[in-house]
Structure formats: structure tokens, C-alpha cells
Length: 233
Length: 233
Image (tube, rainbow over all chains, first blue to last red; front, side, top):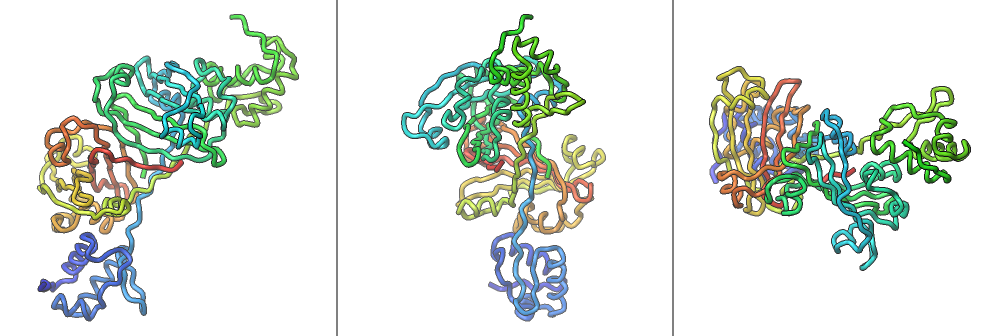
């Protein structure tokens, strides 16, 4: 491989950037010293030095007098997401929130849910399916399992009158959890409830919430078409 | 309306919770005093007091000696999301990252993008369409506009060799931005590039990034089917 002749420091900045972006020079890796780079690029050490200083100023390279110059790992962008209860989400859009319990039973969940809730085979949990509306239009379909080991009171609660999303926030301090966001096609029943065609692309939120390490609830929320979640960087 | 007779404090807790969840008692609203509630529920003031204390302990009610008892606004759940550059996202899945520039031009963006980038009618921006792969399989399709007012250097950069996602993180300190997450059906061209059927539900990320208040880039990322974004609560 013959290296190109790079006469200007900006051309070297671009070449170094390209090598990092292409992965030739990996994050954390030591790069060749200035003398070697000057020889490779066919330019003066001063030109190489000017380029490396520029990249160090930009935070791309990390230069240490004795340890040499390394590629900095690129920092992640960090976003913050506030997730209000569904009623608030609807109300913040200036709409009236409605809630309908579609189904309630106390039964053994499918294996994937049982594993998430850390239930033994055949152990029952409370299963609730409900629809939240905004000004009477479908907003989100909630398919929820509640561990009655973690929250025995849930068996007595009147989820026809009070939605589980809100009841849980009020009755269980939900300290930790994991959220998965994805896209999913509407199944036949989901499409009917949400008032869209089967196969419509829907925004899906899967959430597992724990209280003091103990799984409390696993919920899948399918939002009606057009839903958009906003985050600030 | 005849109120039900509620003899136990736990029944009162449940009734109060129901009224809050149903929105009858709004967040921030003053609720009736203990004497009035005792009369309404047909129980002793002691029983009402026991229930309200319990709800205050749970953070549902806010009790002040002289100002009365108010419904607390439910706190939002707060999630943190780290968004690495695409190459890192792929590498963290243990896969090899690949990148292909599909299209590049310098042209006037559609009105919605022009508005986001705060360009005047007819003003040009750099348009890049590219595909990121994981172990050779489509990972995400990137449709990006870069404001050459904000980043004139972008016109000289070699985006065939160095992907814009990484180039921008390295060359422009992207301080703020907004992200929209949604689900979208694959269009015909998108489906072809991503190797799926037209209409497939895809996870979509729209991102507008600013540097010192000035719009830098607007990008739409369409992830191949099966993509899931994870957040921690």
C-alpha cells in the first residue's frame, strides 16, 4: 500500500479522521509517532504535529508526552426521557383521557412473561388488558401482567374503575426497570381495538418494573398509529 | 349521588385512590376535610384520618396542617438513554460494522427539512443517504441533511470513506438536540435497501441536532426489522 502524499495539515486531519471512522485506527489504539507519520505522508513533522494538535483540541485524539497518542473513544450522546403515566401523556396533548378494562383474569402467564416476573411454572399472575383513549379515540392498548407475589393487594383492586398504570405508581414505589422500544405490525385483534388495519406499523413499548429487586409488572403497550415519543438530547 | 358506606380505612384508601385515578380528584386539587369525608363515607373521623395518613406516607396526598390536604401530582418515571454512534451500536452487539454511501448531493431540501435547519427557500444543504451494516446485513438506513451554513467543512469531507454520523461527532460538538421515536411502514425503496417486504413495521428515529443553537443536521434513521432500543428506568 502506497500512502498518499499529504502536504497540508488539514489533509492529514482528514486522513486521520477517515482512518478512525473506518475503524482502521480503533478507539483506544496507539497511533504511529509523528516521525513515522511524517515519513508515511511525505510531509514535515511540523505539519503532522499541527494536525494532531488540532485533533487533540477537538477531543478526537488523546496525546500524552511519554505514552504517545491514542484514539479517544467517542462519547455517547445522552438523552433524558421523562415517562409520565398514560393519563398525563393524554392530558398534555390537550385531550380528555379515557380508560376501559377489556379483560381481567388470574392465570399462569406464557413462559416468557413468567421468566421476566421470576414465577415458577404454573404460578399465576394477574392479567389485565385495557385501552386508554384520547378524546374517545384509541391511544394505547395495554397488555399487563402483575406479580401477585410482589403486589398481593392487586387482586382486590378494582381495575375496572382505576387503571393499573396509575394504581401501580400510587401503590408500589417502582424503583427500577427496563424499557424496550420497537416497531411491530398490528395483529388482527390489536388492529380491531386500535381501529387500524392489520399489519399497520405500531410503536411498541415493553416495560419490566421491579421494586427492591423483585419483579412487579411486565407490560406491553401498543400505541395507535401516528404516536411519536420525544426525547431531548 | 349516594356515597357508599365505607367502614374500614383500607376501603377508604381504595376509594380515594379510585377518585384520583379516575380524575374526579385532579392533581393539585384540595380534597374535602376529614369531617366532611367521615360524613360522606358514614364512618368515624379516626378511620378517615388513618386512610389519609397512609396515602400521605405513600406520597399520593400532601397534607398541610392549615392548608388542607391536596392530591400530589404523580411524578414522571425518568429514563436515561445513552445513544452511541452507529458503529459502536453494531460493535456492542458483537458484530462487524460496515458502511456504504448510497447517495450524495448538494441541493435544496424539502420544506419540512428546510424549516428544521432554518434555511431560506431554495438554500442548499448537503444530502447523504447511507446504509450501515452489521456482519454484512442491513442495520440502519440513514437519510441525512447537513446545514453547510453551520458546517461548511462538510462539503469537502469524504463521506464515501467516513460516515457522517461519526464525522459530525468528531468535527462538531453537538450540544443539544431533539429525538423523535416512532414506527413507520417500509417504503418500496427502503424495503429494498433494508432487505424486507414493503410495508414492514420499522423503528424510526428522527433527530435534529444543534450546535450553539444553530441547526447542524436533520437525520431520519430507519432500522432493519427486529431492532429494539433499550432504556433503563
